[in-house]
Image (cartoon, rainbow, N blue to C red; front, top):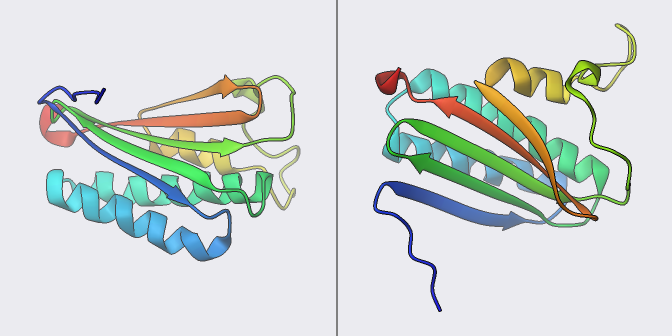
Length: 144
């Protein structure tokens, strides 16, 4: 049985190998999708940076394991970008106040903080024990 999409929902779903060689393809897929559907260059640039951060996090968390990218355009009002990756950690999801490096000179740990600054909203979910999904939502400028 096929799941029908509402007429106001435009989607791309892609799976990428869990290697840094796929980062460019993921960024290009998002930008191409947005250029075709959303004439907001600022949103396109922010979404490109967000997918880069989230895909990099997915690859670092589980090298060699594929990650999923889903981009939805809903009612020409918002773009929802979701990166779902595997995780071997069964720890609790990080609370928002810990989205940043442990200290100012830490070489890593800024990804979620950057994503939070670029997107209008960010949520982290655990669809299953071994997966984590980060959902970044952007409002389309013409809908603001």
